[in-house]
Image (cartoon, rainbow, N blue to C red):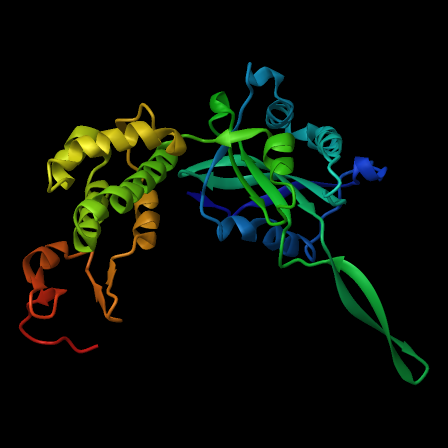
Length: 352
């Protein structure tokens, strides 16, 4: 989890990069930008808002050989080791970005490189580096008094409500390639920002593992449990799975299977499914890991607990009181109607 509420922009450098394939230039500012009380709050909202609204999927710098050969990792380390060097290093970062800007779809734009203090990540106060890029220009009107009339002038500028691209590099977990958050709202070339400029991989911490494993379990429920059993059992299986993650600090695969599998015949199916599908979720050799509570909460919100029937009726099962569905909902077959049915027991109807 991150907290940017008290974050301060200590230094800001602003440059511009063009598209190399279109022979557009690069502009490097000689000095850092002089921040003031009027523009600083606007920039903080512009830079930070996408990260407050974004699900926290972390990345880390990665290199096939060693991180010592990774440009952005070295630039970040240079700044963290000597924050006074941030403007000079920002020039290197901008030139590095310019070198990657050679796809014909890549748009020119301003690059903002900020040194940030009072950032909190995983309850640890750290410094961070922000690299942001604005690309799309918005039309707006300016007005000027001329004699007895107001004249309209059409101009273009940056919409401060939407950051096009950005990343936060936290001075945290350096040995693993730093912990990084990134956004890209103009994904005309998905490889440009993440792969070519930043060169990152997913940060495989407990948050990553919890999300990936829970998504794997959800897909197993849909692909295996539902065809083998029915929709109610799929929902109840996911309920038991989520509850296992919610009440435990550590995941252990054997205890998980023993606790959530009502049908023991599905345990070999689960293991076979994992062998087949695990690379998709990066869980090939994963049987134990710490559970991230925040990831469980996020996953619970996305799991559907509704049985949709072809008679335009929905039955919503309560994930919090799952035992109610086990006790008071029965499925059967009506020979006369030649239809399935759900029988629901209750004492009285609850007021909305």
